[in-house]
Every structure is written in structure tokens, then in C-alpha cells.
Image (cartoon, rainbow, N blue to C red; front, side, top):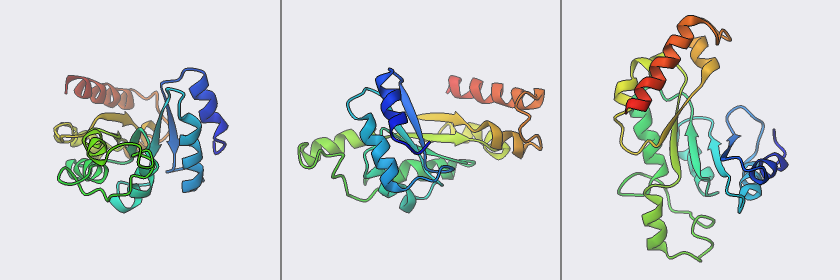
Length: 184
């Protein structure tokens, strides 16, 4: 939903996080900004799902200071590494410097911000293709990935079972993903 009131409500209701979808929803960067502003001070984290795992695409969302970046369709360890690199400043990554909001418009010392940004925002990789499942052991070893999310519909589609989310084969793969992520 595009209306930032949804995020404000989620924050006021005590939700842990809001998933702000810039991949499938018709949101501009300004709309995403408004969602994040609506969450400020509520204790509810704002996670932005970007359209793809591309550093140049991720950069403007990082400058809005989200609590997490969700990268869709991470199918290889190289894509997971790219997600981490896009979200971290050198020498840990390739993120460009533009932290106006993150640094509190000068209220936070640059060196303090740089230290915090080594672990912030969260880097969340979406496992939503059977190729990702095949590469999951390697993806799980990528340093700097903080969390994983399953994209159930795309995963079922990549298995030839689009929308059959209760299919035993799909459930078997979901159980496998959960067990491996939990163990890692």
C-alpha cells in the first residue's frame, strides 16, 4: 500500500517491522521516504525491498536511512556478496557517501556513523528461486548477510508449481531452507 499511514499505524500498534515494497509496488523514492518518516520514533523498523540487487539502485534508498535493505532474487553467493557490498562503506563495501539522514544532518559525528554503518542497515537476502536453494549452503557463508526471507510465490513458480504454496514439494523445500538458515 502506498499510503504512509499504514506504516504509522503499524508502528503505533507495536509491530516489529514494516516491509516497504519498492519492488512490486508503484512507489516513488519520495513515497518510500514518507513511509520511513512515518516510522520514525515508533520503534518499528523500516525495511525497504529494492527492485534488484544493484548497488546504483540501492544507493538512493540507503540515503533514506532504512533499518534494512531487502534484496530480491538472491540466487548465488556472488549476489549475496553484492548486496552486502552495496550496503557498506569502504573498506567493507562500495557504498557511496551520502548520509544526510543517517548522520542526523550533522548531529552524529562522521566517525561514529561510519562505525555504526558497518552493521547497519540490516542486509536481508530473499531466497525465492530453486537455484538459490541449490546454492544456499554457499550463500549462508557470505559474511555480512543479516537475515533471509523466503519469496514463496516465486519459489513455487521456479519449481513449476506457481501459487501451489501448500504443495508437499514446496513445503519440503521451505523446511530445508528454514533448517539450513537456523543452523547457520
